[in-house]
Image (cartoon, rainbow over all chains, first blue to last red; front, side, top):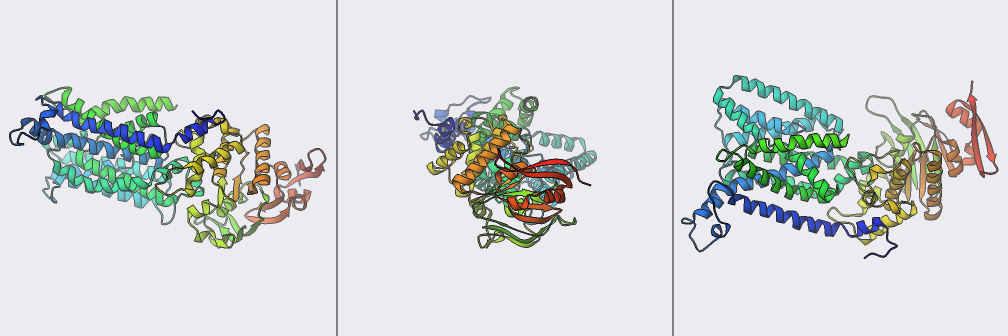
Length: 347
Length: 260
């Protein structure tokens, strides 16, 4: 026990960030690992975890291992990667815009990705680079283009970014791209429209490890940038001028935050389509559990986001089995009411 | 220690908000910054804290121009208390105060015993230690302002710039914040610059005054020399009695009417 003279502040402060960060990494890490290991066990065919990891049976003869690693693991890992990137991108975007209701899609990155994907689907382009097939490639291009346009509109050399301009540019770009998407859809036939709509729902059925590996470089760059941001994000979310006088290079922090969250979103959306609400539901749930310090919220959101989306996809795979519902439908059905609850709670 | 040498500032295409202004802040002083709305007080404070860069002229800390210092370096010497602070998230009082330690910590460094000690001292000095675990957003106006002052104190700087720190507070809290500033200036030798509309607050608290109008400095010097009826008329177009008040022990300003 602390001496009686110690203030509550001292107690909560001293018990401290080191311990809490360690506990969060361990606890949420275990949760994410458990989700990734257990989720592949569930499905139309029953398999055993022990048998799947039994090295005494050759892989070619081990049906459990084949189902575990080849049939189900890619989908689970895609869920983990997408969940982690969208959740952290949401955290960073909310701090950058100083708005708890912002999402990774607020600034038009997902609309750009959607336009790219739908152009390729409609005009059946077959350009591919390495493991990247046309649709992910085009959606990645669209996402990066959208981010670049917003960035150019909202930044001035050496000046801090106006969040109002950022928000306006993003929202405008969102609706402009949506109009273009409708126009392209109008030109499409029924099959193409069906494929486009399915893409827009968001789906983790990536088929193999290839697409996941392809999204990792971009996601890794984003996470490396996230790593230097947390304390600056705390100060930025209190106010730009106040952050500057506490020693934060505001313009640099804003640029890093925008670029990293855009890259993370682009990586996630090009892998699995625009899976909604992960980027807002997860950060808020995490804040309810660990508080608002970004040094805790960011790693906790990455790990909890991974577990959350793997869990949602498990529901999506099983709720109407053998039909597999796109995971975006599940997250939206959870996220919509949650978002409304947040709004009501705020006011 | 902190001085502006003929600095000018204006936004983009507009005119100058501040023209050829020179101000010298005496070490250890508590300097009041007076002037009507829009006279450039806040702009001058932002130039002194390096948040804005002057279009011409320069601001020096000691003999080093601010332009040659990083934000982090500067924040170890100069702290700012703004008029109001609205965090986007529900930080606790302790978290808000610990943010003052930012310029003393490396990128990946977490707060250590020295930082908690600095925060605890700042909380004690501002009488906010009992609020530590509270959510900042649920505090009263006076408590919030004291917490922000604590956060600036935890920054452990020689200079503290305050932009109307008690503007939104009632009389009781105004006196409380004023007393706190006087004590910190006296006991900790923190040099302070205080922008305010409250002439009586400035008269009671400040040993030096800088008076501004329309982006220019009209006078600067010891309070007793600068604060006169003539100066009040020149600043605000107000006819006022400026007298030494025996019980209060300082000059007082009683506005009588609009001067014609």
